[in-house]
Structures are given as structure tokens and as C-alpha cells.
View 1 (cartoon, rainbow, N blue to C red):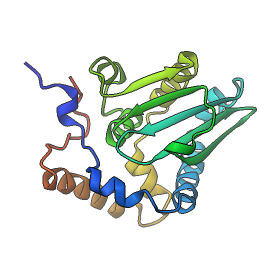
View 2: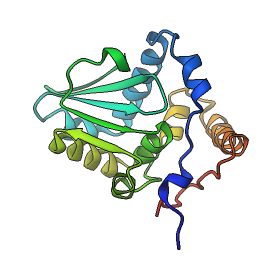
View 3: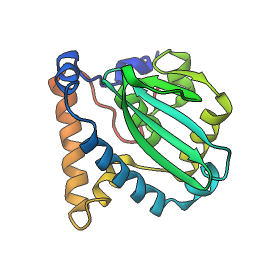
Length: 186
């Protein structure tokens, strides 16, 4: 029998999350906005599919971090904002789960249905908005680590390789088996 999806998901340890709590969100927001701008430039169909729809706010809420990423779509634009969990303004939908599960959804490393039915992620609110986001991301075939490396410019390839090695090492340090690229959650 195949192992459950939750056994493959790295989680940020509680003490690390507590250390991140008092940090300002502005530097993280600037970095993520830069990453989003690069992704949108390299995957223009995301803008076509998500920005053409009515305005919506979708919260991506890592359960193991004190921050929430809010995507604002519609009106021919896609914007990103970081908010603290306690200060989250009204949103149309919320997708919650461990950070690495949410990242794996974008990368295509995890099956969203499997994560949802195993209760590793939860979805609340406007399901149409969530499905539109999911379908647009799936069709764009995004690799977050490569996108992050590409946003750095010329040193992209070595940075991507180093990032993958660090992720594997981190998984081993915290006692979890890292997923190999392309391995599916079951």
C-alpha cells in the first residue's frame, strides 16, 4: 500500500514559525512580488486566465507559518499582498495547509485532490475562484524553485541546484523523507 500524502509533506517546525512571527512582512512581500512578476512574465496565460475574471481575493494560508499570501485577481491584473494571520481582511476563498504542500501544488509535485481528501489542505469559500486558480497554475506548468532562481538572473542554474540540495538536507535534518521531483502523492 502506498504511503499517505501527509507522510511526504515537510512541515516548518513550530519553533521556527514562532521565530518568524515578529519579523516584518515587507521584505517577504517585496521578494514574493518580484517572484510573481517573473512568473507572470514567463507564463502570460496566467494573466489572461485569472486577471480577465471578476475581482477576487484568495488567501494562501500556510498552516505552519504566521503569514498569509493574498492573491488579488481580476480587473486585468494579478497582485500579491502578505498579511499576518490575525489581521487577515475579508477574502473570497482560503486555501490552507503546510507551506511545502502548497508549494508542491504549484510545482505539480502533489495532487491537489489527494491532499484535499487526505485533509492535508483545506479549501473554504468561493470554490469557483479556487478551481480557476488551480486550473491556471496546472496549465502553466510552473516550477517554483526554477522560477525563484530565474528571478535572480544569471546565477539561476547553480542557485536552483543548491536550493534543491538544501531542501533535501532540510528534510533529512527534521527526519522526513523528501519527495523526489515528479514523484506523486498517493
